[in-house]
Every structure is written in C-alpha cells, then in structure tokens.
Image 1 (cartoon, rainbow, N blue to C red):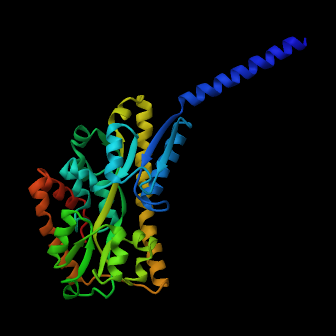
Image 2 (image 1 turned 180 degrees about the vertical axis):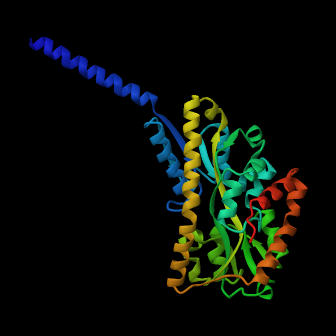
Length: 334
C-alpha cells in the first residue's frame, strides 16, 4: 500500500514538473528598448503595452522593458530591432534615416493641439501616409503613434514679442529640420546634445532651448530658465516598432493581441499627456517659474516660419503635400 502511494505521489510530481516545463516553454519573452527614463510618457506606454499583452494572451507574453537607453542609444537599439536581436523598440524620427517621410512625424506648426494630432495620427490617414512602405525598407513594423508632448521654449528672459524671439541663442537638436525652423524664426540655433544644455546655460553660450514640459520638469530646467513660453511649435511623436520577421512568425491570434495592445497603450498615452502637461505647469509655477502663452502675433509669426521650413519635406518626401493636406483635413474649424 505504501509503495503504491509513493508511486502515485511520484507520478503526480512528475506530471507537475512536466506541466510547469510545458508552460515555461510556451512563454514568449519580448525585449523592448526605449530612450526615456521611468515615469515619462514613452516608458509608461511601453509598460502599459506589456501589461495589456500579458492580459490578452493569458500570460503567454512577457514584455521586458529596457528604458533610459539601457540597451544603447537610439541608433543602436533600432539596429538591434531590425536584426532581430531584440524584438521591439520605441523611437521617433530617428527612423527618417531609413525613410525620409518618418521625419514628418515631427513637423513644425502642424497641429493645433493634442485633439487635432490624435485624429490625424492615432488611426488617421496622415499616419498611414507617413509610414507607407516603411516595413519593406526597414524590416520593422510601426505599431502605433503616441505623443511625448509639445515642445515649448524655456528661456532666461520672457519671450513676449517677435523681437524678443529674434536673435535668441537657443539649443536645438542636431537635426536639419529643427535647425532650419529655428533659422526661419530668426533664432540662432546652437546644435548640441541635451546633456550639455545645463552647462551651456551656466556659461552663457545659450539663452534657452525647447522641450516637452515633462522634460523641463524632470531636470528642473525652470530653475535656470524660469520663463516657459507655451509655443507648442512641434509635437514630439514616438511609436512602438516590432521586428517584422518576428511578427510574421506569430500565430494570427497573437498578431491580433499585439495590434490590440499597441492600440490600447497608445490611447493610454494620448489620454495621459494632457494631465502630464497640466501637472508640469503647476510644478513650474509653484517653484517660482513663469508660464505664459505667446501673443497672437508671435504665434502667427511662428506658423509662417513653420510653413517655410516645410520646404525640406518637399525636397525629400515624394508625398509630402499629400501628408500635409491630410493633417490639415483633421483640423476643426474655429
């Protein structure tokens, strides 16, 4: 009797181990790289994607998020995603090196507000026109589009008029479109990495720069440049990318789960950013910073400068006019 009981227990344990091993074998790990630190919209969206995919798949997928450039700078982890070394990444217009139209994700003075951008980019035709053909060229599929925030000016002195803006020495990312837009605004654009901004401000090399409010708050930029002007001249848009071979290797149901997780995580970020901006304004003002809106004249001046900067797209993107017209069609009459 004892021997029979021991045999049954042993069989049960063996079956348990087999079932556990089978479950472990069925689990799929997805590694996803990003550039932003924890707590910022990009990383929150990446983690939300993982949560949703895990829920939809009943735990089959384990999305491991590596934010804050833990797997290298953008160009490095984009290359790793293209090669299939990792399965996914989050990035923005860095992919324009592969297909120039991707730079139009961040077109100056294109969107009036988040609602306008959301209609065009989150399921709208504008996003389709920008990304058309990208998968074939890159080996990566673009799953969604989500905002990191509108870029606004941070400066030492107020920027209330067109004359205040002209001849400012402003840090700009080393991207032709950003440099050209600054020039069209009469600004002396100083290309430099974001990490060098604080030192350049201390040394008087620059008068300020521009960033989403979340970035301005995260490094307390308002302490050295207390004047924040809500120019909203450029919406920073990032996307989740997935290696196309990996995506195509999955069962159809799993692809639907990934597509659904991408859509819902993008919706989450679109809903989030306006609250992030409102909280940032509160933080800045409570810390003694000054947040102001540009005058109608200054806004119109920047709109015209933005449109002049679009020439770069006409020179490099065959369907640039169609993309710009599409974005305009999602604008609501005022």
